[in-house]
Image 1: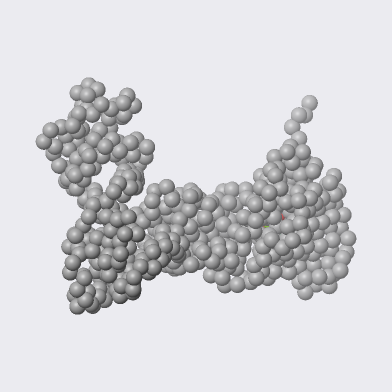
Image 2: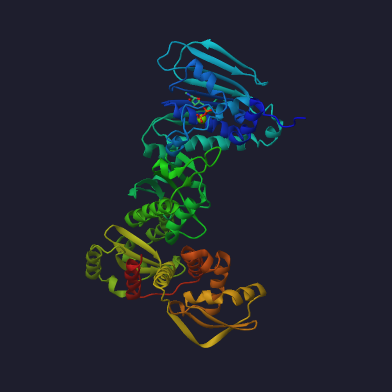
Length: 569
Ligand code: ADP
Ligand code: MG
């Protein structure tokens, strides 16, 4: 008795559809990719009911002959590769020959196409039962495909559909992604008869602006680099322009929008020193890489790729960000500037409504009638009251010091300085923490964190989990200059990093251990793990301490801080 059979083509296609077309958005992705592969200059997509009812996609690409059109609906039929060697160098989106038959097997499908330069066209329909009909049709440029009632014959799949809004959002993401990939192609999406997206053919920068928005472009650094044969073309948000998650980080590898956690991690790492640890940069990154160095055949809908040398890809990315930050890193997000100006204009209004003396020079502000300001805004040293001296100071500020000349302190927290380009506002605590952080990092990189022995060891009652961790891993803390002794479950802190000796030692060590436990001990997390521990540890401290009220700094101390900052990476 025979119990094993070959599946019919239709069942096989429906199974493949389970992978290739999970939802309307994935059908649209495949169809749009086909249009792009066909060299279309313009593609128009119309959807109804989030693509569940109808997807209609029309392109002006090369089209297909009648024979090819019938062939295209067979499983594993493709014009894009013919040999396994071709898999080494895929330049097209498609190559698996699965999309059309899969989609046709789970919908009512109709395709009108004609070969460029041919005489006539063909129209092929596949009904819900999988019956195919082909008929000659008029010639017209390109291909038009209509997909109706997607998944109606596969109720299991239909049940997995989300709301129209969700499916629509997924479709928009797909279209935006491919629009980023091919800026030279005009792409339009109509949703239920209304224009939803419309991207005219454009250069890359214009397309990125159209998709990411003016705000992004205003806050983006554009950077191109060539790294070991890879070309990185990146639009990178400035550090002060950030997002709550990684959804605004887009990677395109050889024109394919991909998701790749290591790339996300690498990009975050590249920004690590200039961004709070729970924020994410925004970026659009185009990577051109030898197709032989990237395997695109690892995911049925090709959303993931595998790099032959992932570390060099990461290095290319990190280098690109570093170069960009070094060149434009001082730029501040437009909205930050806006907020600052607004904050100040509120104050200014109060000030200018005061007697005419407010008009004289900025440094006269403190002498303005202060009764309507709760406390002195400016901690302003005598020397600058003098007109001559302050014009000297102005001259000094025009020499190329990045952060210029410290002029005043406000709220015992911010330093205002003047440089040749304008005014710089510095959060002194953040600056101070940052300088310490960079020094610690440097010391750690050189393997010479200076410990400061404590005269009296500090006893530490660690909770049970922490105690267990300490028993096993406390030696790991020595690289941070922290020495802990254990006597059964009694711990004592014997040294802290010399740089941080002014901080409350117990809190400092508790936070370090918490960061280590969260991120993993140095040994398992490696170099970058140590960096992440450091970042989290000192980053958290920077947030906390900068909330505390500040301390007043005299002008010498202020400028000392600025000079140190200039020397700090
Ligand atoms: P793949 O894209 O992996 O080759 P598909 O099933 O998506 O497989 O398409 C099969 C073939 O049909 C393609 O290789 C291509 O030759 C042809 N084709 C599909 N869509 C179009 C189109 N819009 N214009 C021209 N040819 C197309
Ligand atoms: Mg395809």
